[in-house]
Length: 527
Image (cartoon, rainbow, N blue to C red; front, side, top):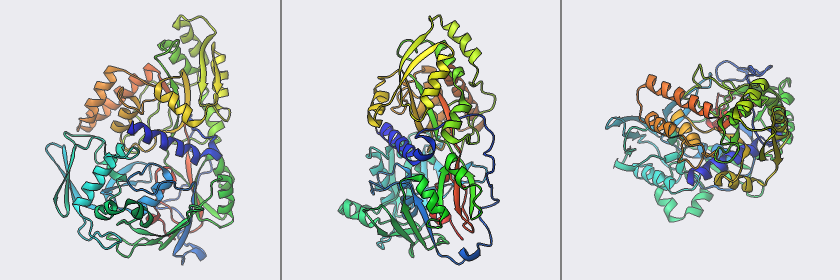
């Protein structure tokens, strides 16, 4: 249940984030890199900076108000920008220019493993202190991890952790029972809180935001959601290049684009349809960022007639994926986009997989192989909006399959997916946030995972996922990823209708690093 709540909330937040540009969902094709995209070398931006070069402040767009300032419940994008600035984490994820990711030191300066990878031992920076003056200790790390495990939203970040031991003031050992391929990648969003202050008064703690990160919270306007961060003078690491960060919440993305063009904000991230509005603006820079959020088409194989594998495969070939991407993203799709729901910055999509493509004739052949009499009615189609479901309805009708798009309120739709009370459904904003294949495959395709919304079940896949998570040899690991994905593809219980391309757009002179979906760390911005 905890994993499901986290997944669904994250999906809903991503849906809200890009609603103005993608009709609330996400799509795919084999479209090449977005045309017209500026790909700056190095860290992006104009080295000269012009009149901005002397600035010590930046104003960035916030897509929505934060409704939960509890760092223990870290679950969606708007929180990410605040918590990653104010709090330290044991490790950080650094994105390279090619979109791949690597682990980097955070609060932990170094680490090593024991017991054949079952125990991770982290050595904390001895100079780390919280903004209330208290030192950061291994006990604070232990308390934070144990608190995350009790959170309905944050528990997935520490899934697999068996125990946490504070060996001394600056040494903490995290035991996962046996080697776990998800570790320590999943721990990059575990905010380390000051245990005594949090336990004494959690409400007051959230108002003050006592962290040990590069920034501290200077002010917060509860009515608008706008807030200001200033560089912390107690931060143990390199001081941020920008001393003051102003976050301005603008719920309507088109209004945010206008604010960017008018110079009222300096930075925002966006999907393809908004990118079209700014790509030729001479006062702005843009760059495409890695993106891993897809549109998930769900087929419930436990209900008739979708318990017929030939019929499910026919649906995979009936969908016009290029048209889906055009509706949702103006044709802009992420690198590595495919028709299987998979995408992580650590483990690339394996080569040589036999995947689906738009092939109506192949779909008709499979419909005939199904042995079912046409037209084949697969029932109500949940999650449709913005023309995507209607287009899929047309694609399916062309090969002898009928369905009826139905719009449901978000939570009613999610409840139907959770309980398996549906035949076919569509959900956007899924797939991002997973660093490794081991984590994503277990979450999306494991039979016992609450995040497995298609209720996909294959004992062979379950066994392979367990083996994958315990495999330390890289070649064997990669081969298992490919094997699992090919089985999932052939079983045809879900499809990726598209992974959109995302962009950073910003004032000239601002240097912007590569980051997942444009959610850059404020501490890495500079003029």
